[in-house]
Amino acid sequence: MGANVAYRGPSVIKEIFYGISIGLAAGFLWKVQHWNLQKKTKEFYEMLDRGEISVVVEEDE
Image (spheres, rainbow, N blue to C red):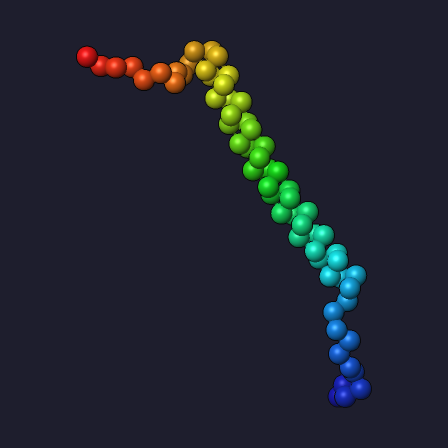
Protein backbone atom coordinates (compact mmCIF):
# COMPACT_ATOMS: atom_id res chain seq x y z
CA MET A 1 0.00 0.00 0.00
CA GLY A 2 2.29 3.00 0.52
CA ALA A 3 5.36 1.35 1.95
CA ASN A 4 7.69 3.50 -0.15
CA VAL A 5 6.23 6.82 1.03
CA ALA A 6 8.54 8.47 3.56
CA TYR A 7 7.62 11.22 5.98
CA ARG A 8 9.36 14.40 4.82
CA GLY A 9 8.63 16.62 7.81
CA PRO A 10 6.98 20.02 7.88
CA SER A 11 7.18 22.31 4.90
CA VAL A 12 9.05 25.50 5.81
CA ILE A 13 7.11 27.58 3.28
CA LYS A 14 3.77 26.36 4.66
CA GLU A 15 4.87 27.06 8.23
CA ILE A 16 5.93 30.60 7.32
CA PHE A 17 2.65 31.17 5.50
CA TYR A 18 0.62 29.86 8.45
CA GLY A 19 2.58 32.00 10.89
CA ILE A 20 2.12 35.16 8.83
CA SER A 21 -1.60 34.41 8.37
CA ILE A 22 -2.20 33.88 12.07
CA GLY A 23 -0.17 36.98 12.92
CA LEU A 24 -2.13 39.14 10.48
CA ALA A 25 -5.46 37.80 11.75
CA ALA A 26 -4.50 38.48 15.39
CA GLY A 27 -3.22 41.95 14.47
CA PHE A 28 -6.45 42.74 12.64
CA LEU A 29 -8.58 41.65 15.62
CA TRP A 30 -6.41 43.76 17.95
CA LYS A 31 -6.79 46.77 15.64
CA VAL A 32 -10.59 46.35 15.41
CA GLN A 33 -10.77 46.29 19.21
CA HIS A 34 -8.65 49.46 19.30
CA TRP A 35 -10.95 51.18 16.78
CA ASN A 36 -14.00 50.29 18.89
CA LEU A 37 -12.39 51.65 22.05
CA GLN A 38 -11.33 54.82 20.22
CA LYS A 39 -14.90 55.27 18.92
CA LYS A 40 -16.37 54.90 22.43
CA THR A 41 -13.90 57.44 23.82
CA LYS A 42 -14.67 59.92 21.03
CA GLU A 43 -18.43 59.54 21.58
CA PHE A 44 -17.96 60.08 25.32
CA TYR A 45 -16.08 63.35 24.85
CA GLU A 46 -18.56 64.56 22.21
CA MET A 47 -21.45 63.94 24.61
CA LEU A 48 -19.50 65.70 27.37
CA ASP A 49 -18.93 68.75 25.11
CA ARG A 50 -22.63 68.89 24.18
CA GLY A 51 -23.61 68.78 27.84
CA GLU A 52 -25.60 65.56 27.52
CA ILE A 53 -23.57 63.89 30.27
CA SER A 54 -21.51 65.09 33.19
CA VAL A 55 -18.68 63.62 35.20
CA VAL A 56 -19.61 65.66 38.28
CA VAL A 57 -21.70 63.79 40.86
CA GLU A 58 -24.69 65.85 41.98
CA GLU A 59 -25.20 65.82 45.74
CA ASP A 60 -28.70 65.33 47.10
CA GLU A 61 -29.42 67.26 50.28
